[in-house]
Structure formats: structure tokens, C-alpha cells
Length: 372
Image (tube, rainbow, N blue to C red; front, side, top):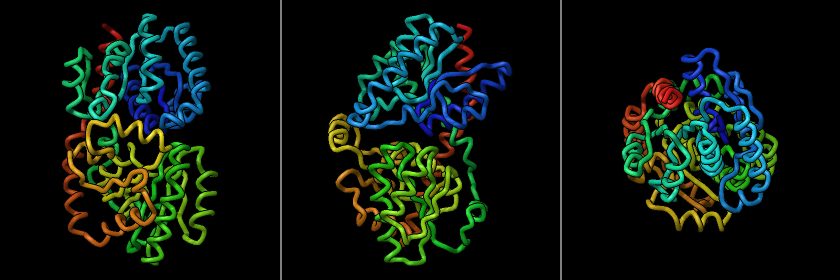
């Protein structure tokens, strides 16, 4: 297995639980994170070695990532696993899967690349790379089958993990936040490049919000390996703010908060499943942004908006992602409880649509690939 970042580590950990239930003697190895390792996964490289987003950012790390993929492919072709499962990270995994499949190893790709959003040409590479694709969203299998790619809708494991009703008071008590304190969860991203581009502007927005609402409190969960970088940015941009920086525990932060200021990515879906109003902000290298914008097929980038097919939450991207705009949009949710309640209802419907026994469905599909 290969999972290339925090969200992939979470997806893979849930899948491993299903695989181990079916095959108690399962041996799993490759590239993974702390959640996978806690399941007994043998990680030859850490998942954060691949946690890079954006064309320019990838170019900076290209040689190292290419070397890892070459060495991993060599090792897997020698060891001949029954199946390879690439968990997201399509830019890394699809090329590896093409090589492994050509070498006679069965391949499964877990998470359909967002060909419906941008880079639709990757469907041809999917057809060459994968014996089967496990899809998180219900509209994806028909789209893939139209291009000759076998696929199964397995639901989104986060919809199983995150309860339909998560008491805010319990999460606040765990974080030591008073029940009546207005709380903003600040999530600038789980990759180092995302922290580099987003954390400073998010913290500046938090400072502006507290200047207007002194009673506001802030909690900032940090992905593994990024604590030092985040602490330095907090000291630089929000020294007197009293931001509560915590290691991991992003689900507790989302369950506890009234609103979240959040970077685009899987975390936005987590926030939606907790029914929290949000403001999506995102910055990246200007060249990366221009290239990605030109290839986009639809007006949304945040998963909640894509799945709802509407701008249900604000998206402030690149030049629009300023401290002033982020602060104003975040405070607006606190001032409009009826609007926040309406979006919570839409998110509850979305939760029901995505709620399946994902680990079992995914394991059943993988078992069919192995036995074919």
C-alpha cells in the first residue's frame, strides 16, 4: 500500500481494519503514516515524504520522490504481493501501478482521481494502471465504467467514522474550552507546503477577528511533523492571540468549534460531516495556481461545494485569500445563525448519502480482484 499524506493515512487505516478482519494473517507494507503503523503496517518510507501539492512544489522534490517510487517498485516486483493498493496520491501511485500491473501484480486504486473536476485525461492512465478503482462518491463508478475502468462505490469512510450527531460539549470539555465561548477552528492544511502558504494569512485573519471580538477563542490542530513550523508562525503572526495549538485531534477541534477557517482538501469534508459552517481559504505558488485554474472543469474547489453542486460555503482562493476577507467571511457565520443552521441541514443530508460500510465494501472488492 502507498498513502501519501494525512488524509490518505486515515483512509488506509480504515481499509486495513477491514482487510485484517477478513485476513487476520495479513501482511501489509509500503508507504504509510502513523495511523497505518498503529495497525501493524510496515512503512518503508513515511507518508509525509510524498506530502507535496502544486506543480512548482513537486518540481522542487521531484528527484527524491522519483527515487522513492523507483526503489519501491523494484522492491515490490521482487516480493510479489498479492495486490497493490494505491491510496489517493495519483501523481505518485498511478505511474507505480502501471509498472506493477505490467509486471503481473494486481492493482487497486483507492479514491477516484477528480477527473470530473480537472485533468480528465487521467482516465486513460487509470485504465492502464488499475484492475479496479474504489470510489468515494456515488456518481464516479458510472463515469469510470464509460471509459472501461472497473469501479465500485464504497462510500466515504469518514462518513462511517464521524457520528451523525457529535455533541459539541463533549469535544469542548476534552479540549478545555468553556461551553459558552465562541470558538473558531483554524486548519491551514496537513502538508508542509500548505502550512507555508496558508498558516500566516489564517493567523492574521484570526488576529483581526479577535480585535473585533475579544471573546473569540481559537484552536489550531497540527499534522504530524509540522509542530515546529506552526509554532514559529504563531509566534510571528499571533503571539498575543492565545491560539490553542494541539497535535492532531482535528476531529475534536471540528466537533467543538462554532465555525472553521479551513484549507481546501479532505478536511473540508470532515468539517461538513461535523455540520460546521466554514470558510475555505487556499494559497499556493502563483504558477501552480494559474496552471490548475486553467484546467478546472467546474467553479468549485471545496468538496462540500462540489458535492452539493453549489457555493454553500465561501471559497477565498489565492489573491482573494486575504486576512480581511477571511475574517469577514468567518465572522459572518457567527452573525447569521439561520444561515449556519441551513447549511448544517444540507451537510446532514450529505452525510447520509456517503454513509456506507466502507471498509467491508472495499475489502469485498479487493478480494474479488485477488481471486480473479
